[in-house]
Length: 397
View 1 (cartoon, rainbow, N blue to C red):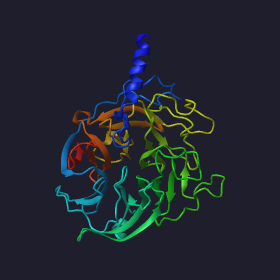
View 2: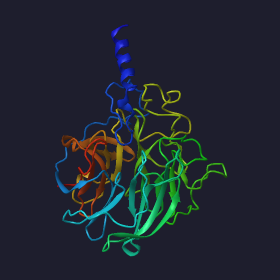
View 3: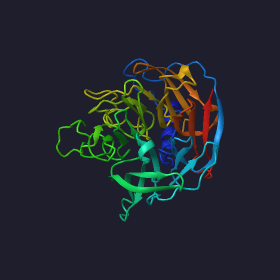
View 4: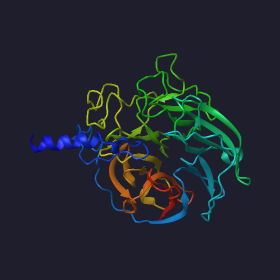
């Protein structure tokens, strides 16, 4: 066997080792031996030139968090935070003091890929105090121990409780929540499992609902009366972040690829984003996805993709005053990549990329622009690290 054959044999052995069987979304593999992928579908679709280096400072607002997942800003300057594996919601005040876990949460399952995921404040939170959150509820079915749900409740800050908890999505919502400019609620359908092309399933779909869980009358129709009315777009693998363009109101998402092929997508109502028919990634074994195609008739292309994987998580557009040079930029947090990717945009194209916080060597789960124009990020421990080492960071001028 020649040297090339030996290298490929070593790669196959590596990919079949137990190390790559770790839970992908919490610790996806970053492999340096990827085979050469197909050419991008258009110039600048991947590996954009380096953006000018940004100047900023980083301070710790609060430490001691256990696998923090999601972050929202309360009107009084405090932060509402979900802790994924602990299944707890906490309030961090403006001075960084972390509250006891809030009462009133429903039971949360912790079997495998399960816990308390995303949260979002109602667009009318100032008057109705409603909080939306996604989680997995325990099930009596041993073969399916987790029931994905989305619920809403009223937040009582004084008594550190959730009141009037109401499940609005049962068995379909998974992880990511986001209110669009029109007040409708976008959420990711079940990830990784199932076929993103099966319009009778929520798996691999972006869903869109009214705030009360009902179906918007202007949702797209997919040609089958049995298709769930909540489906807004199809052909996704694992949606990890959702954001609204501050000028156009368009929805953008990030999603995990398999081995390579993490994507940034601009969403079109009724659009088909190709999974698993096309992908810029490969199977963990090194085999092609499907027939190895990266384009297909009627299938929408990602506006940008990463190979090797960075394991994208949070997504946001910047529109603040603190960093005028960042306005209109997209920010993507990375778990295995251990950085924040700043994407300089020209219309719907990425023209430059900068990686922030690389020197810290921390998994970045979530990122939000604060009312003061600073960025606030949640760091997330490795799956085998001691719990309680996550933190809330402030990135400022």
